[in-house]
Image (cartoon, rainbow, N blue to C red; front, side):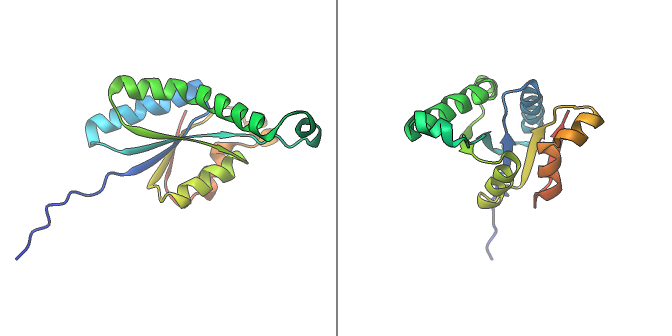
Length: 150
């Protein structure tokens, strides 16, 4: 007779980070959940919008664009990383370039996350109708549960 003493694997949680105050609310929620439910494998993801103008590419090297995306991504991740570091919580951070919602969904699939926790921007219904919403697109297309924090 054998007894399996292995605990269930830590839930793998994707946290899209844009550097807004809503990201701070997401981190606060996750810190409370970690305190009550136990550890999670956190993946912070910042998605940078690609430079699409052919004119810009004529004057800026690919290396400079890559460095710019990294710098902007690190700045967006800074507050979330600081909060998690202060709480002694381990995490992995990632910076990607692409269409924001599609990149979040693809990352979730490729990394087999268990859920996505992300902020909303609390836009008015009219603004949402006109501009759309990353949170709406992700929650409507993701294969895993999505928690939206307002």
